[in-house]
Length: 248
Image 1 (tube, rainbow, N blue to C red):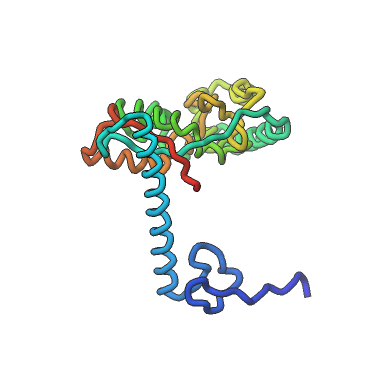
Image 2 (cartoon, helix red, strand yellow):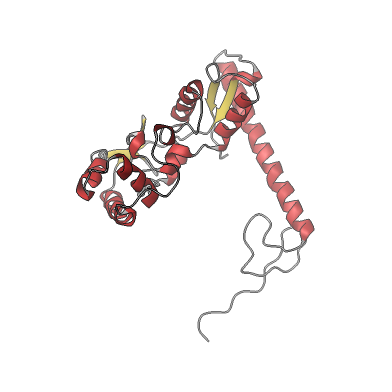
């Protein structure tokens, strides 16, 4: 026999019934029973609501401590990244160089196919937001200090599509010049555990060189704020952003 047999003893955390060990992952424990999946979804929603309530209470305490009392629709939560600045490990930089060489090779010199052409609106992290929203959301991200950037690691979310977009804006660049455009923004330090381009004041890459993910993605807190603004609740220009960690 090749390999060890799978342990068949897995049980649903809700009903206690047996579960296929290959499916015993996720909040529902992989249980195929409908009522267990519904209970797991309810449990997840309840945990999210409780976490949001704790974060809201923390934000309200912070506002009171600062003698601030904005209306409910004039302040919004954002996550918080409390990482400190550390030396950039040489192996992290080397991994990035290898990743960059690979995605440049994958991008080639063909047309950009990963979405709309690289018009200004596709690289300003606006997602179609109005100017007042763009300014407010930039403030929000600065207040957070880039919690989402912690997943950037040695790849900075760059893929072939992002490189093709950059090449479309700078078609005269050789592979070497394209590589140099990224490497010139590396610094001896970055925020611990985060993207190698993440510094204390934010991303060190200009928006034109950032990945499509970085330029188009919003965290759930900012999606909530944008939805409120779209419904006429509060104003981007007057919203106060309060950074409260998402994790307990």
